[in-house]
Amino acid sequence: MTDQNSAPFSGSATGRGSVRPRVLALANQKGGVGKTTTAINLGTALAAIGEKVLVVDLDPQGNASTGLGVEARERKLISYDVLMGDVTMRESIVTTCVPGLNLVPATQDLASFELQISGEKDRNFRLRNALEVLARDGQGPQFTYVLVDCPPSLSLLTLNAMVAADAILVPLQCEFFALEGLSQLRSTVMQVRAALNPRLDIQGVVLTMFDSRNKLSVQVEKDVREVFGAKVYETMIPRNVRLSEAPSYGKPALLYDLKCAGSQAYLRLASEIIRREQALRAAVA
Image (cartoon, rainbow, N blue to C red):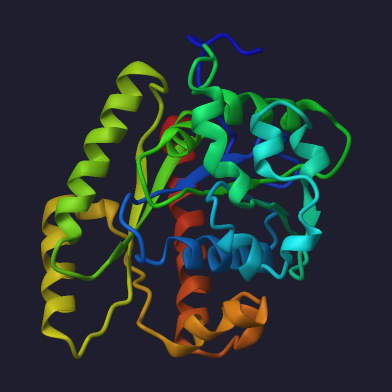
């Protein structure tokens, strides 16, 4: 088991042949902000441009698993089993309909994780430890990105994701209380950084459900950019019917309708994230 005071699980960012993946946790304590939609379609977009991507479904609702076409009856080994130490992450990985994109699925069993593990000393480090084993096992494909789809709450599951992550990606709906929720999340990130994962940072904020015809959307964009500056991605995800329809068919929007505005936006977002990662590596080098 990894010592609780050791450096956090840290990927080497993207790059073919990379052994350790870049781990991004998609987190927002508010529900309905497009978090799972972003996990599914960003993962698909990254895979489409050549990255090897693993989505870890850490939400008891299992919506990322459903949206990637993995039916409940097919989820034999799940993220709950990994966190409980019953199986390795490698054993729980399933393929999806997207080449280059794999999944660790979830079911409602995850809802009992916090209660069952609350007394354990390593309760905050279960996901990080599992990812470390995955990175060094040499038994299968290595990933350049791991995207962790968190539940819409600041729970022990979300904390595990933050401890395991190199950075947080925050989907933010263009609505009235957007800044309030983001401020709360930033405070949590600072606490996790101070106590558990000193490298954790907000990699970026992606504005979702944006409607340029709506004055509120435009005002929220302006406010968020004024407060968070370069942390906010240039790419914004539009409010798009095809994005909403795709999960009911068990497909990412990029497979359901590649040409729709939502799919094209996620392709641009994937490219922007990679450019940001490359700039980060260059700054550290």
